[in-house]
Image 1 (cartoon, helix red, strand yellow):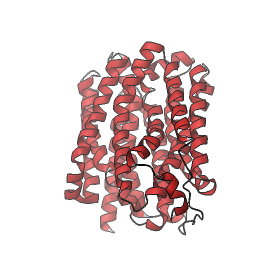
Image 2 (cartoon, one colour):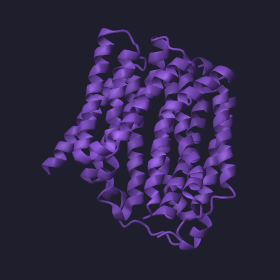
Image 3 (tube, one colour):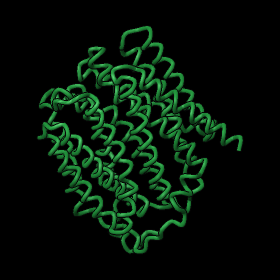
Image 4 (tube, rainbow, N blue to C red):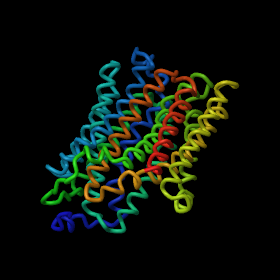
Length: 396
């Protein structure tokens, strides 16, 4: 239970609490999306290869997930506030350093450190929500609004990045991230009071017990399929649309945003369909949409030149599948671990990040990041594996 003695110091209205916490949630995702419009230009800028620049995306996602398993226990030991402030400061410092470096190896290292800062701030934010709002109706509102805001980041982030890069140059993108992180941290310093329980009880369930759970495995695979589809999309979209289809940076950003809009629109109706189909049925239909999108991508790659119609429109179908899968995978993966929810959540996100980062990156590197094949292959393989897993669970 939260330390009730600390709760009066967190007597903020829901709106004030959201304004305090949301920036840290948004920045972790924004550091990926705002950078996308300049990705095709970065090999020439840094004097390196597209594969090395791809690492700046893949390693960020992997470390963002792995860091949650590290910083979660640290925040249980020393508190949420120091982890949050340290993470925000680390994120800001590395963002400013990224803006002034022209060395490819240093750029990759700084992106890893930036991801560590984002992971620390993210863990502290969600741990604080659990501490303060556990078993209170406000928690559902906060999580729902966080999800809605994160759905908007992929739509608006690349547009903001394109406009900043066009007007001020690519370095200004990272300066902007640094300024935003500093502003969020300065706002939190006097207001973000410690909420960690006085006595933290360790979960009786070991990591191994959770990882061996069949339902955890299958639904985490489904989550990885959904999130990985979007990861591979934003890893390949700049090269396909800018380098091959001739889109401008702003044109690319607007085209990219339509996939995020498709997710936002689907989210408005997802609750009705989930209530009708159930958890397993919703995940199965989500995987079916990934397969349909993959077929459309393959047909476009084989019989037409890269374009909005052949690359982005199939992503609309995949985006709907991502929403239907993402709406139920957490409930499916975590439903048996009510006594170890914190540990299970950390593993859920960590395993997803590892699968997405490793498998998604291999797809991009092996199948050509300037074609639709990585996205088509990832969606096909992961959807089929997830559907096979659902069949296995049903047979059990």
